[in-house]
Structures are given as C-alpha cells and as structure tokens.
Length: 108
Image (cartoon, rainbow, N blue to C red; front, side, top):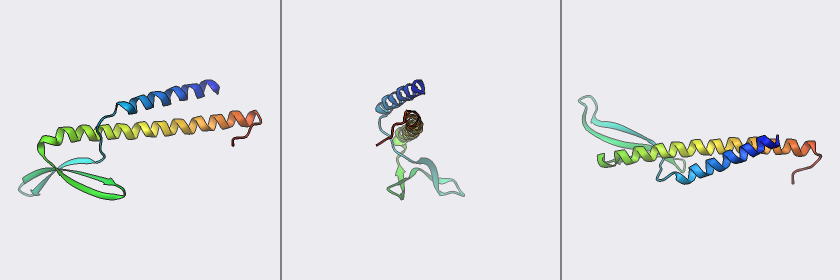
C-alpha cells in the first residue's frame, strides 16, 4: 500500500506540472451558424459556454477562431487533469485511512 501511495503522489506531481504548462483557456463550444440557415447565408462563428451558472453566447471573428479552438482544447485538458487529480487524491486518502486504521491510528 505504501508503494501505491508513493505512485499516486508522483502522479499528482506530474499532473501539477502539466497544469502549470496550460496557457490561455476558456470553456465552451465553437459553432458556425447562419443568419439565414435555409439559404446558408450570413455565416458567423459563435462560442457558447456556461460561467457562474449563466449560459452565455458570444460572436467570434474569423481571425480569432484558431485561438479560440486552442483555448477550448486547453480548457478540456485542464478539466481532465483536475479530474485525474481528484480521483488520485480520493484513492490516496482511502489508502492512508486503511493503513492508519490497521495501525490503530485515527485521523484528526
């Protein structure tokens, strides 16, 4: 069990290092819409996302589409890493409690 805890600690450190490398990011999805969908005219990009429990939609100029896509990808990576960290921390906590229970110790 101690070996597994050490592995988890190393994984958490790697996650933290990866998180530090993430640059600009933002949540959402980028779509291409039309003002007149039936004629497929008046096309524009928009990003939709939820922030502080409010749904938002913003227009995105064509020259920013590449950057926005990169930011959305970075945000997805951020969320994935945070989930991995959380899963690892839960496993680590359970193992520590199991070890301390077996040793007759109590967590304070």
